Image (cartoon, rainbow, N blue to C red; front, side, top):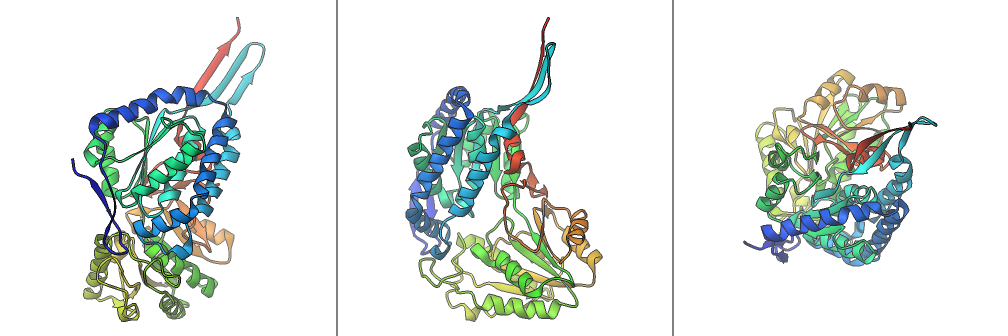
Amino acid sequence: MKPIQLISPVDGSVYAERMPLSLDAAKAAAARAKAAQKAWAARPLAERIALVRAGVEKLNAMKDVVVEEIAWQMGRPTRFGGEFGGVNARTEYMSEIAAETLAPQMVEDSDKFRRYIARDALGVVFIVAPWNYPYLTSINTLVPALIAGNTVILKHASQTMLVGERIAEAFHAGGIPADVFQNVVLDHATTEHLIANRAFNFVNFTGSVGGGQAMERAAAGTFTPLGLELGGKDPGYVRADANLDAAVDTLMDGAMYNAGQCCCGIERIYVHESLYDAFVEKAVAWVKTLKLGNPFDADSTLGPMANKRFAAVVRSQIAEAIAQGAKALIDPALFPADDGGAYLAPQILVNVDHSMRVMMEESFGPVVGIMKVKDDSEALKLMNDSPYGLTASVWTEDYETAEALGQQIETGTVFMNRADYLDPALCWTGCKDTGRGGSLSYLGFHSVTRPKSYHLKKV
């Protein structure tokens, strides 16, 4: 068994190295989680909530080291801090709605019958978390799973494997028992073996379509429920009545923030012909204000991509599009930090169409294609011409128009005049190759619990 290495995109060095658990050790970890679950679920809900909140508090106390480690592991500039705003907001919201959401739904409570539907914890929840927002994506399932009475095993992406260690350190310091929440390092074969042998009662995976397919194959025939969030190719549509400056600022930030490595980042933009030229001009000016550089430099607004192989995919998409007739509007020479490796200059492409990979396949990098459209009908056709469906951003000044368009867009979330955002009160979900299931909101608790009916009769 070989060690798993974390190669830092900052300088290409080996930042961390861990040995994955042997199959026997992994089985033992799953067995401990199963053995601990009933006692954890038996604790009062208020106590479980308090312990989860205490764990998040301990995590907040690690802010300085966490921000530095995120930069080393996946390249996000330290000027943006950690992910604590979202972590705290999501934890608080899920804590606040837990009692009402998990309470039994009473159908009848009389002198003859008591009939109700309760929600039971599933058991052992297995979280396979990604590297792009390593704390937020873990918290999305971890917090509701623990609050609902499940035990949790977390396997983090190798690119951010120190994140799992920090979360475990914090949660254990906050009082959550070691067997109730475990962080593990596993290779693919061991992960698949555990899933195939029903070690878990729910698997939540965030990652690529190929990774999701591997999860489904591993779980085939086990009836283990899966939550799959497999990325997107999220569109923005700028209507004729849009606030142009706001649309440029939000959509370009949605395309470029985190080096474009956002599940719900904006990867393609459709602009009404009356605003197209002005939008493109302003978008180019916006991108030229970015500073690509070392994430530890205070003036860097764009860091390296998490791995040079990810940047290579984006470079190939851009090169192919240009060869097919697309026009690149950003001169890479404006970004001298572009090293041909993980550091990649941002790019805007026009003269693009849906025959190009850059408009159809997930890029997950700092590139966006912009197309001119003549009306809503053309925009809808193009927005839906995608294998993905996570979010869509519509720019208009009218709620009813946004809602009417949203009903026709094949997506999990419809935004009006915002993008690249996750509201903990709304379900985070998708359709098509983006996957299935949902996290956060009251439905996030439904994902990690099952209904249990009680039909009680007096005689």
